[in-house]
Length: 381
Length: 258
Ligand SMILES: Cc1ncc(COP(=O)(O)O)c(C=O)c1O
Image (cartoon, rainbow over the protein chains, first blue to last red):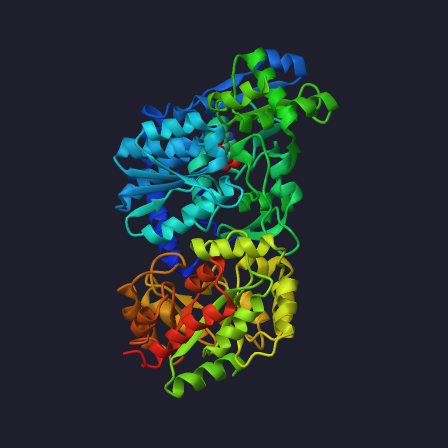
């Protein structure tokens, strides 16, 4: 169970722990606690139990029959949209919340873009009786009002962030600033495979349940494994189950937030990675219709995979993404999140161009459901 | 020993408490006038901030100052050029974030600082564990490392051992910003750092008035003052006004205000 738990503070040249001295002991505490917990069968069993009886795991692997026929491929959807709270974010959050409880913390802090991670954290806070504070950019609050109301209904405090681009990047910076003042009683429940060590490694481990399940659900190794990439947690969790196979791993970034594809080496939010930035190193604003992909950096493991060729990173634009939401809805009866639709859109394009050849088997992680995006889609309708 | 540390030790050994004001580079058209005013008011070292878009350790005042400087078009080059034209009576130290340092490479960045006449560098998101590359590149410059109230005893020793110029003692668990009173953690921290090093130990974060400055140097060798000055500049204070506040803090440090 734990034989694969090799600690990773660096992924090639990426990763590390570039945080103020005030946060070093807190990061070390999380690292120590996670390492112990991940080797502790009692912790692993408790997490597995909650993921099963509370969060609805394992999530199904759904053959997308009609879309497959249209595209000429065999498409299998890993249904994270069916996990409790409507996205994969719950896998990581339940892990971190149990860890925080084990560490004696009374409070959870989180950043959120789309609100999926904020809702998941608020949910875990309610489940375990922990106070929850979520930082969210003002711009994201406007476009994800449903999730803001869900968080408040769950009892979380949502703090609007008005600095910078008023999106995920700024929410993350503000959450880190706040954590400095609250390390004694609070755990920073970071929402993706990013941040200072041990977060990229820890969140990947909590998300690998996606890939491990999918691996046991497929009857043969797929030709392609596809997932969208914001910070990169659903992709990292999915890829983790197929790294030792011949499957081609494809991470799909938003055209306006493509840190791997269009960024350069830099340091943001405590780790070295690929970042959208100017010649001086000022961080650029990302722009995507999907708030969860509206981030100028990417998890360090993806920056590393891109440099070694272990995975390939591609982009799609907003128009194709919206079309993909509609196409999947009408062919399969599944309204997916705008984030997840990036993976679908890439496949639609790649099947049409022949890049993904006819007859190929494609495993695609549908990271979340689209309810939160209805207001955005209604404006476009 | 580098220029900065020779200077800070000499001041400390003379019995004078160090006053180190911080000014965000490029904050206003006449921003270097604030450096001259600070030097005239009795500063011993000047810290120049190279603004970063995402300053993780800064509170509202320095965030706003950084945004204002960037909005005015300040760049690393423009700020270094401005500083290189000055002839200041005290050493100048750059304060910035890791991404600006490593963007074009630590070697390039440190050479540019040296060429512009800087003698030290503070990068709060490069903790001692990540500092090897920067320390190697920073020949001729002192890399000032930070300790915080959360730093363990062992780490305090390691940080003080590798820091140059002075040790920057972060007085509280929080971001930069003015506070009404010096936090209780400050004095104890300064004392515990002084116990493991003979480098000057300066307190920063929350030192914002003659009273807080005076309280800080009961234990520390000096103070770093930033947010309160940047707030004044944002509120429209002239270099002369800022000089007057610093003169008040200088008097408090010299024990002349009682
Ligand atoms: C549904 C959904 N998918 C994907 C993401 C992107 O995150 P990650 O790349 O970490 O999976 C988000 C982020 O909010 C999301 O809400």
